[in-house]
Amino acid sequence: MNVPFIILAIITVVGTAAAMGMRNAVHCVLALTVGLAGVAALYLQLGAQFVGFTQIMVYVGAVAILAVFAIMMTHSPEPAKPPTFSSFWTVGSVVAAAVFAVLAWAIHSSSLATHTLPPQPEVTVQQIGDALMHRFVLPLELMGLLLTAALIGAVVIAMNHREETK
Amino acid sequence: MNLKLNQLDQIFVIVNHWLLGYLPPAVRPLCSSILSIALIIVTFALLFAITTVLERKGLGRIQNRFGPNRVGPCGFLQPIADGIKSLTKEDIVPNPADHAVHFLAPVLLVAAAFMAYAVLPIGRNMILVDLNAGVLYFFAIGSLMELAVFMAGWSSRSKYSLLGAMRAIAQMISYEVPLVLASIVVIMQAGSLSTVSIVNMQATYTGIWPHWFVFTPWGFAGFALFMIAATAESNRSPFDLPEGESEIIAGYYTEYSGFKFALFFLGEYIGMFATSAMAITLFLGGWSAPFSFLTWIPSYFWFFAKLLTIILTFIWVRGTLPRLRMDQLMNLAWEFMLPMTLLNLLTAGVWHFMSAGVLRWLICGAMVVVPCILLSRGLKQRKKFQVRKYHFSE
Image (cartoon, rainbow over all chains, first blue to last red; front, top):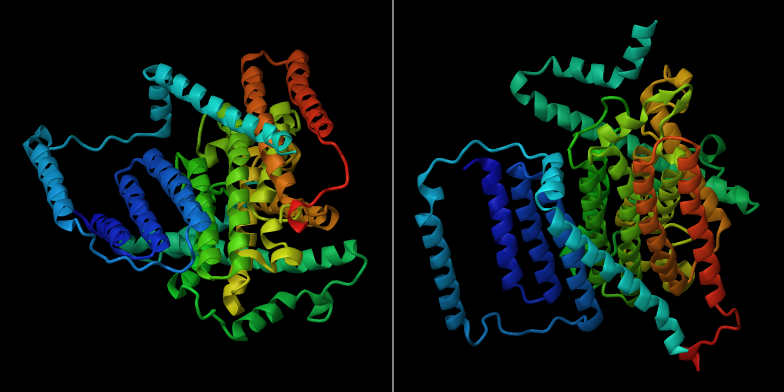
């Protein structure tokens, strides 16, 4: 428990809490982005550069933009005023408490809580690349094939679009 | 003689160490970072000021008129006058605007633009942090700018701002794909995501010629694609639809005035310098000299010489090309740039596994040139040129 961790944890928790508590949908997305950036900063603080930057790129760069784009195209600019607490908040809080209890119990009874942690390994991008290229080469190739096929498929759809509309 | 030249090359590093020597060891890392950050901010803000004058004078020359020529010698003190003007102007925020988000947008934009400089090697040993995922960091930070653009457009509660933001985000997302794919060829060849090792790899010479990646078929194609995508990413002409003055006033920053407007201007230019600097790092050998007999000139001189050359090219392009239409813009990204970058990945792979020689040059050159010609011919043929029919105006 050091000072940077506490600061980042506060940013993450406040950001995600604000994402649930705010009334305006765009404010919620922006607050959620702060929370996700806080998680990325936590990864960086643990020395996981690759995961941290990928988190920023995917969640802040893609998911948040996708969300705000959807809101911008569908939502009316006047903020709606729904009640802050929904009608089934009691059920919701029971489920949330149950999930938290299960997770806390699992972590507490696992070996992590009793054993002292080994020293933090210095993981470079090189090592991640080696692991992807040797041990996990088949899943990587399959994912690459799938994503490239999706990309080319999107382009093909975009190319044919104009002829249909004419 | 050699030692003195080396000292000139490393003068900023030496001065930094000399200054830090006066401080207690506990605060040295913090002060070192603050000093370097302050130097980067001052240097690139100054470069921004110089670029605005150069751009206005250059565009004036292209359009057969005088540029700014009243303030100072040949008008070169114009940015100071502009700065004072924007600082003393009233800061108007529209009444229905979302005040907090409206205020944060320019701050986030400028902060994100400056953060990208952390991984750019400006000279030999002159880099803020040598991350081993440096290129990834650069693109991750670049995606923050899209969020700032959205915040500006949405929070203004203005139709023009919202339209501008939608155009800007659609464009930035579309061109981010070819931008990243075009730079992957360099990462494949260098086998590293660290900007320092990418530059070090290019700073070697055969005879007098450097090993810059731009001097290979895939490198040249990658550089061209990267620069086109970079122009679109920084919303510059001919891709400046998000701020097309004749259609949507100033796009996403229509409702900004005073120094906030100046901050948008600053953020845009700083972002453009950062992407150009990344292009220099990836393809043009970073701080390395163009010929082996010129290595005695300090490394930072070469970096800024290359940067200014790219900036002048940007100004030249802006003065030459007309603005694209929205559908042309999207078609260029998805139908031309994307297939070309994917093919370029293949070319880089073939280049890597063939032995050096003339045959490798011929095959890889053909792999770049033939698809480029065929694709542009094919795309041109599918277009039936005719009088455009406007469906919405009837």
